[in-house]
Amino acid sequence: MDIPRYWRLKDQRYRLQGRKCKDCGNLSFPPRLVCQKCKSRKSVPHEFKGLGKLYTYTAIYQAPDRFDPMVPYIVGLIDLEEGVRITAQVTDVLPEDVVIGMDLEMVIRKIYADGDKGPILYGYKFRPILKKMTA
Amino acid sequence: MRKVAIVGLGQTPVREHWGSNLRDLAVTALRDAMEDAGVETLDGVTVGNMLSGALSEQEHLGALIADYAGLEGVEGMKIEAACGSGAAAIRMAVKAVASGLMDSVGVVGVEKLTEFSGKFSTASLATAADADYEITMGLSFVGINALLMRRYLHDYNYDRNDFAIFPVNAHHNAQYNPNAMFRHPITAEQYAKSKIIADPINILDSSPIADGAAALIVVAQENLSQFKGKPISILACEVGTDTVALDNREELLWLKGAERSVKKAYHVSGLSVKDIDFYEPHDAFSIMTALSMEASGFAEKGQAIKFADKVDIGLKGKLPLNVCGGLKGRGHPVGATGVYQVVEAAQQIRGEVPPELQLERNHIGMIQNIGGSGATVITTILKKIGK
Image 1: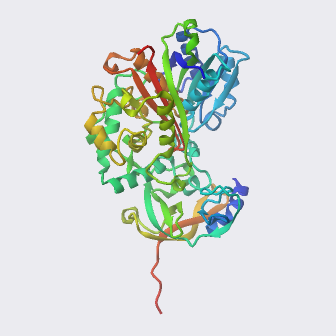
Image 2: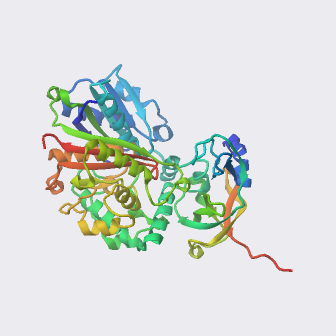
């Protein structure tokens, strides 16, 4: 189990934290040491709001071992409001109800368990936006 | 820079080789290529391989294969670029010979994917993608290609079954190739009914996990008289790269890495897309064939399927594709695949493929080997010498 890796990625997994270039303002997720646009090495952390639209998706029926208990599950590319595209599972929706362009919001969910006795890994997934409760 | 050529070819059949280990497959192909070239030793060996560490618990292939091939003491190294490892190893050999650093380099691509369960191999193959941001989201390699295919269907208004044209062609050709894994034709009806792996990709879109090794010998054209193998000129072997993760690409459905690699290949060869007699795209999945044809200049954006239909990609067509069966029919032993592609194209130009596969126009062949979903792309152009 690669504990250091999951500790290292906690700001990305739980808070969707990328980088904002100090020179050109370009946003990146995942964080990069060198700006993809202007090649500057100066950047500050930037938290994404976690709202976006589904750009493309797949329902996976034959999965790598650790994801096997979850098939079929949906993985998509999501265009965040801030203009960055990220890869994540789409949850709380059946494969037949998923459509390109649907509005999604980030939630923290279990990603997988590392065997019977290992730790459970959490991180971002995206779900269709829940309607706000009105008083 | 010196002009380079291929003078020796070797390959094992692509199979589930449960009875052979990695080194014996590699040595068989390499010694066959050396015999074909008429050489007893080499200045160097480059080994194209992706997963020997994960699946055979064996790294350090350069020295191992040099030793077992009877080339004690010869420089040897493994080259890894995911599914593009094979052609990447050819690229290294071409650089060594063209620069004058070496006079003869053996390239062997070898892979054993059937040592463990299919699911374990699936997980290992996924290491070609971004480990922190793609694989931990549950993506498989098929899944990544499915993301591409879904958006392609959406943007260009195709039906999933329109993609049948590529695997049907590959299987048709593979039946005549004795080294192919699948030597049986398939129909569009079978394609339509085949099992979904990662929607919309089905099993007949997907090249099979397999074992195999292929090898070739790269030398300088100025020294051709020293070798007995029928030489084929390497006009270009050029690499282009792109982001490993799909989500960081500028345009999802445009293989920038392929465009970069092809532009360089056309530039150094002085050729254009119109000069190509036959094309070997990296048909790991049907969608890759379409995207490769578009980024390489054969078809306009979103038009690959219509173009394939129009020009006829069959053996008697205007642009034959995957002549020996491609990855889909021959099989896809990942790190070996790029070498198989070039060995088959060289056999085609020599006139040494089975008669059913021998093309009428066979002087210039282009081959594209792709690592990952397009992060490393190597385009090779071969030409008959003296034409």
